[in-house]
Image (cartoon, rainbow, N blue to C red):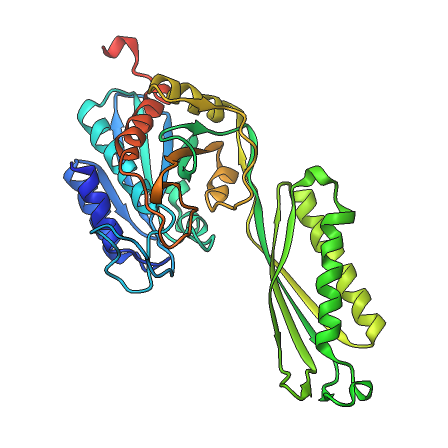
Length: 378
């Protein structure tokens, strides 16, 4: 299998979450060609068995792209306007397919590997869709693992940690209903934009004054919408934003303090205000034994490792799999130069093809660590 050519093919044909029809079909066909048992549903599942062991592990790759206009100079840029693999999911797919090829040829393990190709990671919906589709009941696994590339880190450097590694993401929306009026007579109504501005500033006190500095939480107002015009004071304002937390207790505290602030500011100004707080991604928690196995397998594959990296501020849909069974999410360095070092989601980011065989070899080493071949089967 030409991993680089395959990665470029996926890169040229990106698809958004729950629209990965071409991607799913291509992945399923490759798995069948490798001799795996294949099941298609919310995602694509490949089953590879060897020996007589009854243990099974799951290994996951995400498949979706982002609504971004690519600005790249390479000859395999996206052929779908406004859609781009700006997070490296094209590389994640191919690393796992490369591992499937290696393992299908060697069968150097004892047990079952469940290859999970997941849709719609970016919006936090794909893992839940596969779980709701019954993937964990139909194909039971004892552990689950996932890789994400990390721009700015040396190529192939593996880092993870026991415990929380990725933050939760909660989306909030505040609707303020005041009394609009003429811009020349603000005293005759209750200007919703002024009330909203006060709420924006007050919300920052949750992080600055309500939570300890070590919490690592973030509250960001990202949209401020009103029905005002240049000479019309708005009667309605909507604030939308994003909250991140490392611990469930902090996430719940943010929601509590947010309601307290919204209700308090609204009461002060005599307006009504509503708040919705919807947690899309829960915190990603790594189990101890799988995290230790990741470091051990990486070292076996000859890679540099860090088993106690700081938690990441971004969120990861893999959290739902890791909630269901013990698991580990790890970062693998994408390089520091050029497009490989650009931030994830940048329009000129690119996955590093040098990482493809490294990632495939790591996956194979992990399978051999978690499902070792029995001595009596040698």
